Every structure is written in C-alpha cells, then in structure tokens.
Amino acid sequence: MATIQGQTLTERQKGLAACACLMAQGDLVRLEPAVKAALDNGVTINELKESFSQLYAYTGFPRSLNALGVLGKVLQSTPDAKWQEGKPWTRPAEWDDALKAYELGTKNQTQLSGRPFNYDFCPQDDYYLKSHLFGDIFASDQLSHADREIVTVAALSGLEGVAPQLAAHKRGAVNMGNSQQLVDELCAWLGSEGYTLHSAWPKGNPNTAYAKYFVGNSYLADVGGGVHNVTFEPGCRNNWHIHHKSVQVLVCVAGRGWYQEWGKEAVEMTPGTVIAVPEGVKHWHGAAKGSWFQHLAYNKDVQEGASNEWLEPVSDEDYNKLK
Image 1 (cartoon, rainbow, N blue to C red):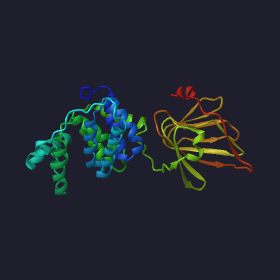
Image 2: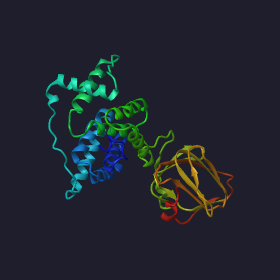
Image 3: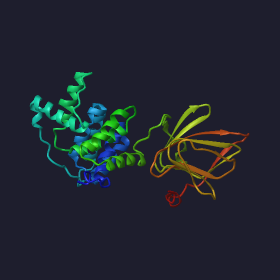
Image 4: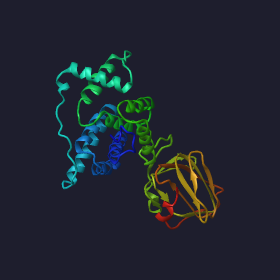
C-alpha cells in the first residue's frame, strides 16, 4: 500500500532495488552486503530468490545464478540470523498449461504496456515475452506486480545501452501499481546512493598504491597523455595534500564531488567543472556523500623537483557538514 499511495520508498523496497541493480552489473562484492541489508530490512529470502530468478530474463542466466550464489553464501555464513523465509514457494499451475501461461502473459503485458502489445516483427520474441516472461515468471506469487517492476527498473538502471527498455519499464511500473512519484524517487535514490555510475570514462583498477591517502575506495585509469581518470565511490575523498612545484588540473566528468582549499569554503564539482589547483596550496577533493564522482587529473607548469606532500585525512566532522 505504501507503493500504491505514492509514499516514500520503504527500506524493503530500497533493499530489493539495491540488490537488483548490483546483480545486473555483476558487482558481487557490493551485492553481498546489500543482500544482508535487504534481509535485515524486511525482504524475505524467497523474495530475493524470485527477484534474481526473474532478472535472468533481463540480465542473463550467468548473473542470475551468480546472484543466487551470493544469497546462498550469505545464508550459509550466517545460520543464526533471524531473517524471514517468506511465503512458501509453490509451482504455478500455468507451468503445466502452455495456453494458460500465454493468456496470463498477454494480460500482464497489456497492463504493463497500457495497450495490447504484439511484436509481429519477431514472432519468436513475441511468444517468449507473452508465454514465458509475463506468463511463467509473473505467475509466481512471491512478488507483487508493483514490486516486480521496482526490481526491473532498478536492474535496467544499472545497465548501459538499454535506455528504451528502461523508459518502457518506468512507465510500466506505474501501470503495475506504483505511483509516478515513487518511480521518480527510486531512480533518483539509485543515483544518489551510487548504485549507478553512467560515464564514458573507464573506472580503472582499485587505487591500491595510494589507498592509505584516501578515506573510502577509489579507482585509477591511465587515459594517456599524462592524464588519469580518478573514480571515487560515494563518500570517498583523499587526504589534505599539497602539490609542490606544479599545478594540478581537475576536470569533473561524472557524478558530483567537492574541492576545498585550506581556509576556504568547499566548491561543488559537477560534470564540466574545471579547477586548477595552485602550486603550494593545501587542499583535498573527493565524492559527495551520496554520489559517485569522476575527475580527470593532470599536472602542468611542472618544475624540477616537483612532489606531492600528503597530510592528514579530512575529518568525518568536517566532511559531514558539506551539503
């Protein structure tokens, strides 16, 4: 009812969405704690099984099976957890009657699309959609239709190159019982929490060589010409530091972050923001609390003996004051 009435996303819905988005990306490292958080916040074990099973139709069997493997690992490693098993799974009657599955799928697809949908261009896919995706899969009673579309929108939000399908399912999520307000909030929340990072620039490898100078995880990609792309996870920032005998140039290319010089107010960085860090000035830069952040970095006016001086971390107290 919270979904239908357009109230704020519940923690349970956020748990379903986070797991779906990470599963779609194949990010098993982040998926494991997301699964635990979802179970802690009221998502049942059987609902997660159903979500990961349904999403094979959108992301492929390998990622579906990998996500189910993560769920199994979590359950095995925490046998004493008080998580809910959920509604017992029962075999849908439609699985034993192809015509019933097709009729159910046609009804569900019509509701989701807002009109009858016939993909005459490719009869094979038209049949698969009606009989299997919206028939066999939707026949299970583990998730409501509204929740199925939250899961699907979240998964598609984590993928690149699927904009038409994402747009269709955002409309379909409303047709299946969610409010437009909730769908918009869902997409904004996935971005603000860093579950989606859409960027043409490579994320790179974990920035292990400089990890001791960062709070949180960062990634480094050499893009050539002395330019590096640095990716910060939400909340990640580097320590206060000084560039001696060189000027560093920062160009934000994705997400939202901060740059601050000692004794001055922090400056927000969004795509297109360019900052030239003066030689000898103590400063830091990093992601906003609720967003991934990418910037290109290169040095100019480099003099002989140029060096970096790393200093103390940016305190949580100071960082959390930034809005």
